[in-house]
Amino acid sequence: MNKIILSLLFSIINISLYAQRIVDKEGAIVRSDTLNKNIYLCFTGHDYVEGFESVLNVLNKQKVKGSFFLTGDFVRNNEGLVKDIAKQGHFVGAHSDKHLLYCDWTKRDSLLYSEKRIKEDILQNLLALKKLDIHPKYFMPPYEWYNKKVVKIASQLNQTTINFSSGTRSNADYTTPDMSNYISSNAILESIYSYESSSSMNGFHLLIHPGTSPKRKDKLYLQLDDLITNLKKEGYQFSKF
Image (cartoon, rainbow, N blue to C red; front, side, top):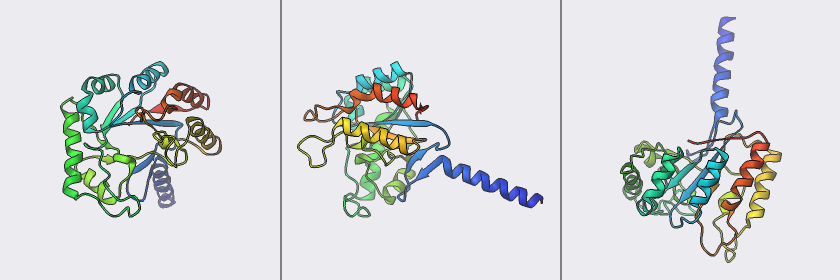
């Protein structure tokens, strides 16, 4: 009887651990803490910076913390801003140094740079953060595109690879009207609310770009305040990595 009880307990523990975190086939964590109504707001930064102050103001107003994944170029060009982000208690992580596309869009297993070059690119990003006394453990690959080799390279630098959760179109908020895959902010919001109403967003990694091309006048980050308010009404809280 005791063996049966122990076996059941181990099964429950294993199920609980599995339910808390979802890892994709490439080895990146794409969902966290699925047992609780927590959403992880993820923000990336490289070329553009215009929306960061707006995002920080909303997060402060809403009293929630976010996770910012920033390239080395972004960090060096915006040291004061990055310090403020960290000082306000948000997570700051790596997003590559030069925002290189590490692997082929169609042949995902094929690296476009040597493993040594990719490792150096991530390392330089980490060194830029280290100069600001920021020492992250989580890394979101550039373009949110990677393979098992990239995840392994990151792990060699003590970085756990993170990516956004699939199911909504929020990651397309960078698109501009001249692109074939352009999607408006209203359509993106509709995709988020539709997904939430039909599926749980527990542990969801929701990606938003605080800086986008000037060609895109329809900025999703300007809808962040209402988005957080509406998700709070559904019982969600917000966590950082």
